[in-house]
Length: 432
Ligand SMILES: Cc1ncc(COP(=O)(O)O)c(C=O)c1O
Image 1 (tube, rainbow, N blue to C red):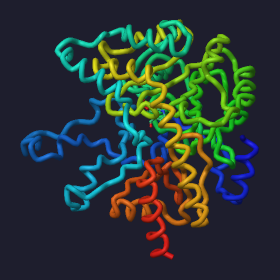
Image 2: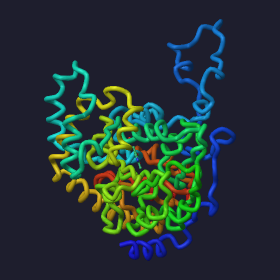
Image 3: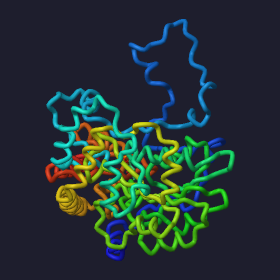
Image 4: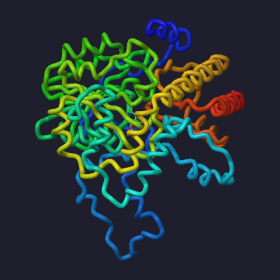
């Protein structure tokens, strides 16, 4: 599969611009990576202060930023893909104007009907606090993965688990550092920045995969966390089992590897590593999963990690009470009982990718072959311009990632994909 991909890349990405070949280190105290979240707005101003209803009285002294932790002042808030209603408001589009949101890698098929039913019957219980320990969901997941409940920790989305990782494992005083691929999922940087710890950004390989030997080279006695998104966001690429096992064999025991499998259910390659095996083998590997992608429960916020029980128990100590809501727990359990829905999502995604790839090839555009539910496409001109034009036509995609001419589009239904392609073709033709 990977060989096929390499050939594919050669054909369609003969001169794929590899990221800068040098590893960079960012000390969150002395320097923040300028592109730390290049696709996100850089704003630390409290938004409430700017809204009319919350406008401070003219006599009020401005808030002294010195009261805020410096590491928080340096954070760039995550700016998610724009909600559909906001796009309509901004562009002055009529309420019934159809918008395709292909920006956040949600599953447009929607959740399992069993999940919807489970939420409906759980509605009457929402006056009660949720089960703090997620007992039933952990049991369902334990059965699903053949692990014990102690191997599991559930979060308010896997984002929250990333947050726990920074809180529980990274310590500035101790001099801890993190290693992160570049580009990769932006929240890994946030976990390090919030803990006030430096992180090294290691460029991907020319075929846009995590460069595990280069990441290994950055490991030193201070390295605590090494993040690998597999498939990677925004590239959709995977590392091979052999590469991953070689990395684990070679890592000192003070390094914890985070293998983020948010897009696991979409992977078609049979060479991609199964993180759980490494957990079973006793490695310091934390496998992340989410119900936000293939399970189509993004709005509920539920994700989890699988790791050796000692690790999950320490991570759990930084967890707030009742972090996973009642509806999320009910829906997640019900979703696990409906593997056919995941099969439908996989089939739709595979067909959608083929549709997009055929159209992109016809337009002579390059893209990165993806194991996930999105494609990173080189549109050959400034991607921000193209994305703005797409938005005017009602199609929302994602740009940034430090890649000037690339946009990321989520695979949608056949009709959504078609609308993206038609709009992209029009924009590129008009700009030619
Ligand atoms: C690689 C990766 N990990 C984690 C997440 C966060 O998922 P969740 O919705 O579970 O917080 C995302 C979401 O885009 C992602 O792309």
